[in-house]
Image 1 (cartoon, rainbow, N blue to C red):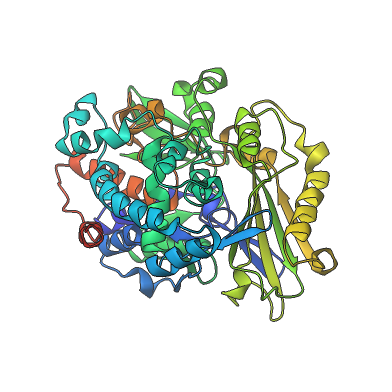
Image 2 (cartoon, rainbow, N blue to C red):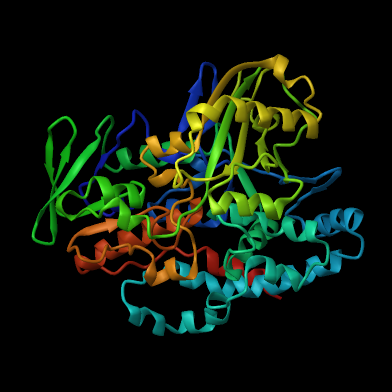
Length: 489
């Protein structure tokens, strides 16, 4: 979008029949699902990206701000979350008496924390000298802390369940809140302050709308065009060979494939061996169930998270990568209560996600797939009012960690490289990849990291770096500064 609007001749090579990758649409007969992301937070970043190309996101997408946002369930206790501070404080008071003041203190403190950290997520870190930037100096106490997200939450809340209401967002990074760097406590703040959004038709509509803009701006999208390898002249990526034998020349090359997969598979003579890439740290994977159902569960929320009975042990098992948890946490999206476009009248679709081990240790998911899917459905039936669910399933699709790996995601690590301190900023694969003259990265495997808003920011950082290579300096569209200033008391 950005490069086509700026006058570059853009050709996008898409392996599949539709755009989106992990944010593509899945069709099961008359039911449509999002492959991965199921809601948008930090919407102002997406709005900025559309504004950068002279457009408004609402002209392409039908946004629904969700309130309540998510139902969180621990055993027989549930909390409805809201982006309305007064409502959220009241909800907390009703379930966790005397904790609402701690919530308000958390929100005030994190308004300042986010405003301090946010500029660091908008800049490239191509050189170590980037760490001399004054904005990073201000943020350093938050960035360089050895505290985990759970440690940070311990400064605010006493009930461990309530801490989890402000730490489960670490799952967007595929990490445990007991291991995730403390700076990422901003994720829950962003949700509770700025809200989360559904886009009618699914989050995949964002990718589809971006594709429309690319074509409106004269860009070309080639579907069913799988890259075999990149060819070089010295340090310059000169050509791309497709699996059908076509060869395309390029002046600049941007890689949006999963970083470690691409580096081990399509980088040609400059690819890295799998053994070397396995030395890096990776996120967990996910076990996915997509269900077409011939009824609508109107009493069930749009988003529901059922925590494992022993959440800490569950996450340790997931991230150590050797044990498939029987005591699993389940995320359920029942978007049909909001969106009538994703299923036939009177029907609904249910999206179930269970964080689980990646494929590093070689679990035989083919043998366990059906039994584990049934265990997940059993737990849903036990923990929700959907007691008759099995009788109403008419379509089912399952994705295991091996399915993700077979879709060119390295070791099935759905959330990409882990966001540890030694794999962030300059130490993450850089937007202009080191060792190459004209090869760039975008996506969750580069800076700033995983999650839709940060992935969109990676695209803007990379587009601006290409501009700079041609001697152009861009003035960014900035809605965030005013929005973040307004929330700081």
